[in-house]
Length: 352
Image 1 (cartoon, rainbow, N blue to C red):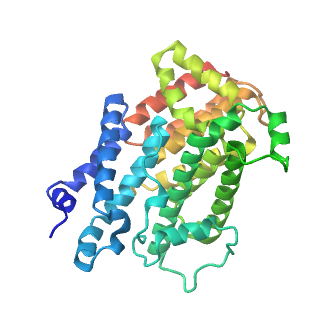
Image 2 (image 1 turned 90 degrees about the vertical axis):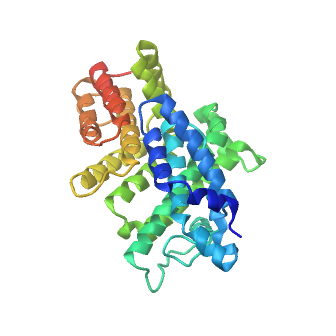
């Protein structure tokens, strides 16, 4: 007997679903973004009921039938991550829900991810090494898992650090008698994600193309910069006039940019530009978001005067944003129009 959800999806154009969701997410219309959120949530619910997350646990014929739609699950997961980054919404899907294998692989996804995050992991590459296509797809899913967990970490535990001054935080961190707390859990999770990223680079770094390198560098940027969660929302408010622009300047003053975050931001631009130099390749859907966030991190750093450029505040250094603007201008996504407008305002407005 055919599963009712499978029967429903068979009469639905899944291609339309996969296209409408990213269009709504990357639009500059809040109404379209809201509709994309509803469509994404309902699609993920359908995926859960269809057992796309654990298709291998089903009976033979049914497992093969459901597995036919497994690629849609990975797409929906990507849109869930991009929506959270672009609109400052929480994620609605977690890597821990997936118990199936990755595409073109017989290894369970959870096994791959847990080994990457395991403290006893040793940097031994698989032998024999998988085909490049398999290795690249595994790398794509694993970097999505790390970024998704980082978003959840920031949304659930980030406020504990935000309200603690630097001196108190240092004492708190090195106090062996501190009981289990949100702050301690945040530090533990951050350390675990950093280790996972280092191990990820050791295994998959050589096989990553420019588009995945940009996503990898953005993930490091996201974890190193606690204020990045509100970047896009505050920046878009700046297009509404003086109050919104003042909020963006306030964000730049309150969130001190470390050199580590700035280095990752420039690395994001490097790989975005490297991929964009090939006219035969399509622009990845995460490029506008990661490029825009990287540009704002660089802007905040320049505005705060904590850099080694000849001029410490504003002025000609703001023209560094034009490199990010140039990349955004050639991306054929509606949201890029607003992003370019924000960078124009920042370049003309100078420091915070």
